[in-house]
Length: 334
Length: 248
Image (cartoon, rainbow over all chains, first blue to last red; front, side):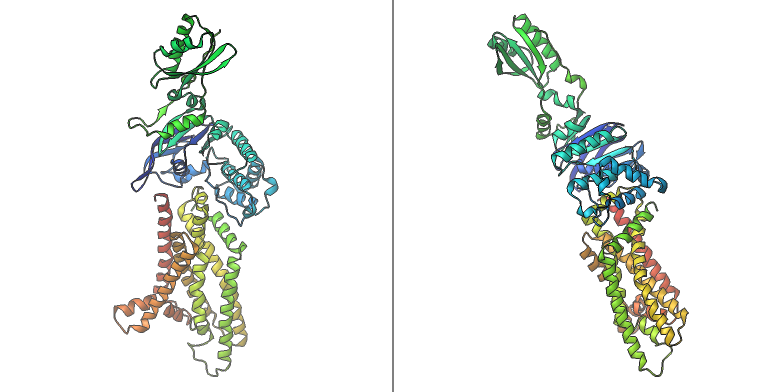
């Protein structure tokens, strides 16, 4: 389990990371999401112990990474960005070296290396010089290295960068398998990556954590919240009724399906979508309109991400804690 | 000292599995072989041998062919140690492994030191050959090698530090050459200044005078202390430099 508290890192006057706090629980895959240069790598490097923080504290399984660095690093399997490896070593030799370095006892070392190679399926490449490996295989060696000492926490910096779609799928599957025993924190700037592998996401922008929560919670983030109403009958009247409902920002007539009209209502910034939806349903029913379907509009994570990272972060509270309840979904019988 | 042993083995491996160590050793042994050849040619025609200017004194310090490799080999052996790890980025996986900084620094220095010893080892053969042609005082041989080892060890420590202070091997080798050659030239100052503080300082650090003493069987404890501190100090600074990367 990783606990990060009020982490700040400055390079001179430039603040790369500003007051970032989060936790990654056991058996949880957390995606660390942000555009390039947002401070992802810096944060991961601080957790892994490669960089020191200007302020704040990181603990891994309760061990402080600054006070007890060596003991903390025993518990972390870290895969740096771009996976630096020694080109003159063979894959097996390299993993053997890393296992020894990470304190795997001699008696168990061979077995640990075999297991790590099995996990990432590079057994047939054990005798290949690392310098001759393709990008995908280098990535796997990096993952095997992170796994070899069976640490309780995995920190992976852009684990699928530069891989082809097949390799990406394999690495994602691998991460899911690995997560059954480890806490995993992985960084990426690709949204679909998080959707495919993570339970939870942290969104960082310009060094500040701008949102965190489960994927569903992030998708139905209030500020981008909208509800779809499928109404049979008089579409124009339905729009009118909806527009008169309290906190609706605007209503769009999206399309028609047979005799039904699909309307999308975007809620005002401060509205509570659950309550507003209930009210809207009451009014529509009261107005004798036949309601076929009511559902929250799933915004893609891309939309959320763009929304979260394009604005200036708010001064008072940089992070938006998103509750699962915001992801409520209502079905109304026609 | 966590992590010393695997890093030491890997660095030694990296030196010997690449042509690096072999190329350096070939050049080194060529120069030393040339030195020995001249020595035999020179002394073959010498009828009367002075006690303190014999073949051993020649071999251990009276020719440029001794000092050239002595000054050049350590920087070349250590230039990769940190600079290459930083260039390739492997320093990140190294420093995030459960290892202590003194362990890393010491392992890198020891690996280059062992390679240095391996390079010098075949030169013992020359002494064996000399022994077949006449008397050899093995105590003088031992003190000469002690000098070679001490000077090499301290130059390697300087080399490791310089490698940690630069991101490219090329800059690292230039920096450590500047220090080792600079130290040698400073020592030559002993013959430039007649007396006074400058003369004392220069003679104290003079590699030339030190080797002249060592090759005559004299072990001056001041020189031993000088080189031991020249090993400890750069390595200590190196540990601080590596630690400082985390806080940069």
